Amino acid sequence: MGNKLIAWIKIQELHKHPTILFPFLLGTAIAWSGAGAGAIDWRVFAVSIVITYFITNGTFMSNEYFDYETDRINKERVGGDRVGVTTTGGTRVLVEGLLPRKQVLIASLLFFVATIPLGVLLQFHLNTGVLTLPFVILGILGGWFYTAPPIKASYRGFGEVLMGIGFTVPIFAGYYVQQGFSWLPLIVALPWMVDVPALKIIREFPDYDADVAVNRRNLVVHFGREAMAPVYILLTVCSLILFVPVIFIINGLEVLLLLLPAFFLLRSLIPMTKGKWRNKDELEDICKNGFIGMLFILMALIGIFLLRGFVVSL
Image (tube, rainbow, N blue to C red):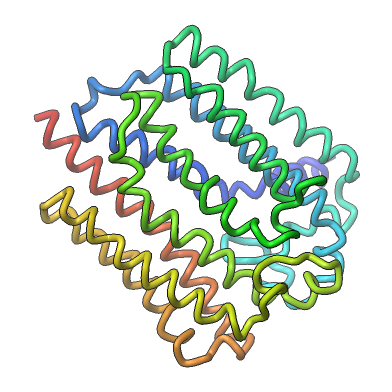
């Protein structure tokens, strides 16, 4: 019983939930920054957090189910047998037979279905706007069809783009359910929107052989690692450049927080320009620093807009 409980916790990949939770928190922080704490409806916030958690769980569990064959033969994944924020190749819960695959698939579907009544509650009882339910449905469809047939986006060369969009929608949604429509969260989200597919690309490098074996035609398999290495470099540079609009929007010392993600992104970028990704240990460091830098983009932006909100509240 204890081992099964641990397996159910492990397959949720709670260590990776910040990749979805933090974007939503950023959208909320941007809403906060405009009018202070009075701008936030905490009932809306609480229900939205539960929806975010359910969609994230449904996504990770369905991915684990549909990626089973790839994960089973993946011997080159970053992190080896360890599981953490920087590892690739899934949790291995299903590969090791710790849980029945069918139960995980059913749990994934239940998490997705549970978000619908909560979305109805937000839109029609808490009056969060006409786009609320579409956002929820978009999250469900994006999470499910990332690996599920018939679309299987990550197997057909557009999973990277879907991730960039899917990981950015929560920023806009977090703002929208509090303040309505605005272009501001989309402008702020640009560095993140570009860096997410960049990181996905580099994390496909160590999984290349396993992906080829199961005909997972992501961009790295389709074009090859040599061709995609410059793409990762270009996207990472673009992500850094897109800090500039945020700097002009904030126009204060808070923007110094952006030095933190910049530091880790550069630690990932510079070895790539030198071709060090060809070495397995170097590639692991590149992936690790890229992942940390990506998360720090969100953490820095959340910090910036929270500080701005506190100033407004004074």
